[in-house]
Length: 229
Image (cartoon, rainbow, N blue to C red):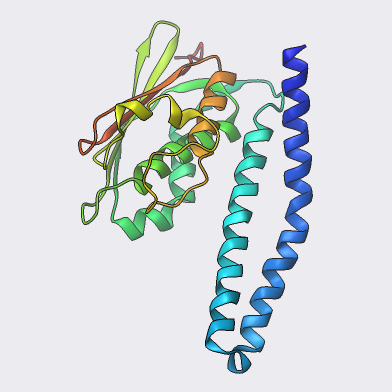
């Protein structure tokens, strides 16, 4: 009964988030047209308000997109052998702008093949690497190391960074929906790591973090081994 209720709640979240996209795109589109076509006719305060509308709509758009991604994770698909090298390469390509802007250095050796859902694994690595980029130290280029080692019938992955670190009291909270470390200067929706946990759970694995404030973070998760490994 609990599982059925959770599935209904996830389906509801998906439908609501999907249906919110269209009116939000209308708000964002018309606000941009207003600023573009009537810029010379708007008073300074009016222009500032239009800019705030656009920023708020863009943040809402990101939030809805993250909720949709979270709700989609329950979609049933058969696990197949997935080369994590191609998965990480695609995740890095999706993050290329942030990597260039922060002068980040990413280090990883040959990664294993696992059993999984490729789309979800790309999202997993994209979220974890993206978090390391987002929570980097000011004036210090991020260095992110991705590694994997065998652990019984699973692969243990580690995403290690040299960022600002996480307070140990926040370790459990960061994997909960809409919960973020208390750093208001860094933007985010509080859904990224909750999505990672849901993906790892769906793959029968575990996810956890080791960190101290100011010393960087090591995020670990396990994924099922593939027979060919």
